[in-house]
Length: 117
Image (cartoon, helix red, strand yellow):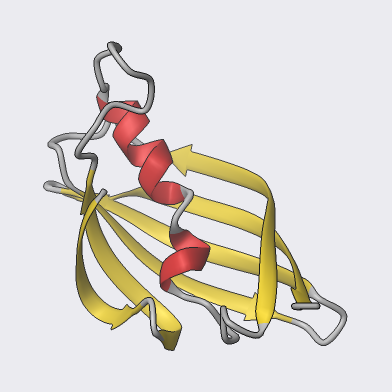
């Protein structure tokens, strides 16, 4: 993935916003479609908006749900994300998805978060 942060970053806990573009196909030899680009980017919401330190905690994205209100356009996908984690280790990464025409839909990642052993 080619990534350009507009807010936050991998080393900055908290909300983040990032534009992403796939550099290689998800499956070798298969063309990359517009929906493929959006779904791959949507799976990055927690990564760009971690609520706790990646070095001290492990994250398991147990589920990803994506809802779109129109077909995506262009190669770049914007992800504006916020992650929330409770003390029991239950979390949610909530993302607003964008393309070159503007807001496109939402992504939600269920998270299990635990201290690294």
